[in-house]
Length: 344
Image (cartoon, rainbow, N blue to C red):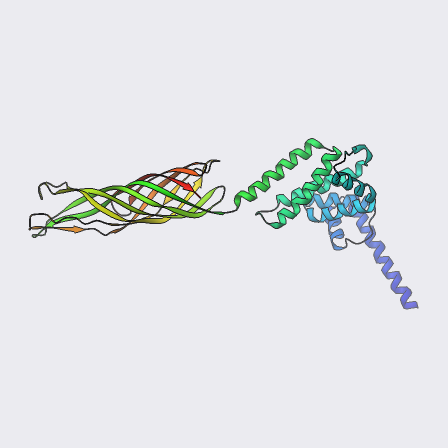
């Protein structure tokens, strides 16, 4: 019996000492000590005044999740009938008279509204958790509106949270695809040489059409994609070194092939217009005729070439107009394209 008495005395002494430390922390406005005590023992019997101060401390230290739990606890402990009556009136779409409800209850609803808002602002990406927290944020916003409590602040804060939610939604990358038709000009290299080893360069300039499309992912700011198309056209060949061979030129030589490669762009308008770069490869097949003089022969360059190009896309709802201007890597030839497309 003596041991039990001593144990109970020691327990009561520690409890009273702990309670004294907690009250001293409140008087000193030691928010960290107050919040730590509460978070370590949330089920302890606190007075209403202590819980109100704890709520203030939690919000000061950005423990908004714990603050929502505490304020719900205060509502259930102190205003269960008023809370139930208010929810029933809102559910039945009845007119609510804010004067019928105590100011302290309205402040608790305000704390819940803003704490859920701060929780949502803390998210860096959209998820089901954001949707769940937004349900409570919307509920307490509606309650405050029905009570006509701090209406201007409620509307302004609601706009802030809606903007953040839209930002989270916009950050999500979505799959996109489109078809396109381009009018393009591309060049190929070749050379003409004679039996004695002399050589002169030839430039082949082709024009034609490229039919295809693209697929990729985009959010509100960036777009990453791969595009490709089948090209068909024709071009002319001209010898610019008349001293080497006179009058070697051809026209309307058919050419066909493919153009494909990755691209990246930045979206620069609300209509999703964008500018960026592409790094396509062009595989083009074209047969040059042999000079009539048997002392000369043609050596064609590689059918596969790579291009670095600047790209722009001007969006009009689902339709878009695109431009592309580039230069072959490690070569002097150029490439350009103008076209239209449509997302689907």
